[in-house]
Image (tube, rainbow, N blue to C red; front, side):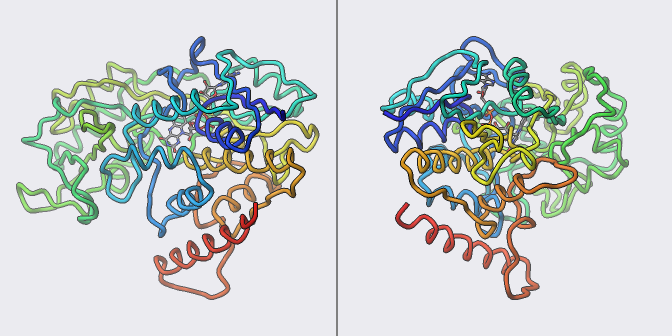
Length: 433
Ligand code: FAD
């Protein structure tokens, strides 16, 4: 029987392993977390969501929503499980993080053809097909081996996670439920601030003590995960245009828009936990408690997880990988997930799916399936495998998808048309595959 090694039972590796197994290919899935955890993983189950519990928008007017729909068409396990474990979050697909990961773990453990090996994978064989999906926090030993093979220095930036608090500790006399612009069912918890409260908070935040990170100031930060204190430091009002934006929210107590609003999003199915949206941070834990407790409604918040910051490693895919995400100089090695520079949960699932389809086709002597940048999955693959001077990770977005032939000015209409075209193209491409 044909056999493939998959390294890492994260988002990409879990999807890849399942897709291969389903196609009758034997998979040896290596996952080290039972014995050794990365700095961001804390649970024993697979496909752990290390930060937000949201997989982003589920609307076809959004590129992440389109990518999810493409994955549904391709039969993605992880999106199916995410849909089943959905929690209310407006137009976003947010999940009960434990429910989601536990279900994926159970399925992987009970799928024929998957053998799970709970070890750190270090030696990369030259005579077997290997899919490396060990994530942004790939263990050092494995990363050394990857660097030896690729002959490249590693690329990296810093990424951060936001804190989580319990619902019962939020003071709902001050906070209120509402979704921005009335979209969704009012699922977010909003903590309103007047001008004085905002400036008191801002002044403490910018001088709060941070956890030490070597050469941190010189290091690269990924914009979408900019720590809240860094956003604050870029200008005293910047937060009110970002995570503390009051627009689209009316305080039911005053029937007015507040000066600033901190939003919290449900993190588990029962609604016992909430994460503070956009509050990824590198503050010391004690400082997080002190400064974030100044937010009206969070005076007595119980933090069940503090925000953290981590190095995020990826390879220079633009030089190293071909369009099937296979190493150009070692044709038995493939990459999937965040380590390719494809950014974000859904992109990790997408590259895991894409690699598995291509590896399966290869083993079955079928043609490669190269998706073009007409679909969102094809657009990401194209972006991370085309040479460029400065490569930075990229998540799903409409900026990388091929332009429409016609010029449509209305953005929403344009995005809808792009999505329609993408889904049609995808369905045609996989016919008979
Ligand atoms: P992972 O899900 O990390 O899976 C990799 C797996 O490989 C892990 O289980 C790990 O234990 C295992 N592993 C590593 N080395 C070895 C080895 N040598 N042998 C065996 N097993 C190994 N994206 C978002 O969309 N939203 C967010 O909120 C978000 N927050 C993030 C916060 C942090 C701190 C980081 C680092 C990243 C974040 N990302 C976020 C980016 C990215 O989407 C996630 O990291 C995502 O989990 C990547 O999926 P993956 O499958 O590539 O890797």
